[in-house]
Image 1 (cartoon, rainbow, N blue to C red):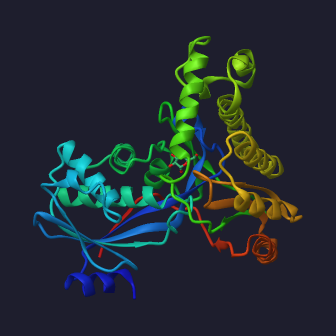
Image 2 (image 1 turned 60 degrees about the vertical axis):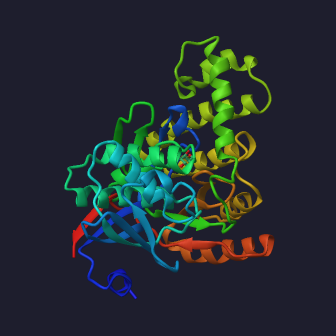
Image 3 (image 1 turned 180 degrees about the horizontal axis):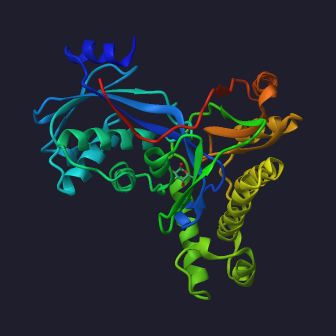
Length: 382
Ligand code: GLA
């Protein structure tokens, strides 16, 4: 059954609008967004699709594909849904929009999300951004996509309690078909770069280890780099770690020890890799790009320690394939997805062999997705 039919079955009337926001991959620049670094994400065809109808009542009614029941959010009590298992992201977005003076109005929303949950492809950002668009449309206010991304991040940080950076919401809102976004997370300046890989394509694979950013050590990593920054600031006049070149980092690295040292080194070196990767892509040097993806993964494994045996296995089986130029985990880590640069003509065999090797090693299957790079937000009158 499609989303329209579902909507009618649940709410007894036709949906009027379809709002969508994208899941994302990140080509390179992992765990640097909250350190003021540059990231390089792209929006996917995997999306949060929200079918909606304005009711004008005082209630936002939410139904989710695959989940029984309807969640009701009273627009006069939006602060009180933080503990919800489902609907808390939507409530957080509604709450902060209202705080900014947007007149939230009641509506019925049906969520059909094709971004797999907990996959590192930003299902939560897609939900937040799509919700923000729907609520703004129904409130009749003009919205700025970057502002919606920032507000969505705020909802995730302060309402849901995950201290994420801006990358996911920005990509979800600002994505552009067939382009990756080189985003400076310190200034929010950005540049669209064509994601042209010639004979190669990006294969997205989910290791299917259940994970949650809240349960994972994501917030701990943030604290560790904050400690590193504080120490570095005693010697260098910087506002974020990403400002340091590898040479400048060398001058201060003796001040740091243990995990704090390793985390900071990852951030500095990953930022340097982003620069090289974008140059390689622009020059059509896909071999170099692939190599940088591998180095990024090794750094996330050894220095940032956010991979785990599943992501390590999936990427290492991918690298064994002769037609694969590079492979790495994406997103928060500890589970979720990888991307691999694979020759287009070899994708089928790649998926078969890597899938089998992963199953043999880990005991359950990885999923591979057919993806394309698309626009971030779409709004359609039905
Ligand atoms: C998650 C967060 C992002 C970013 C990545 C790691 O996806 O939501 O803000 O920090 O992890 O790069």
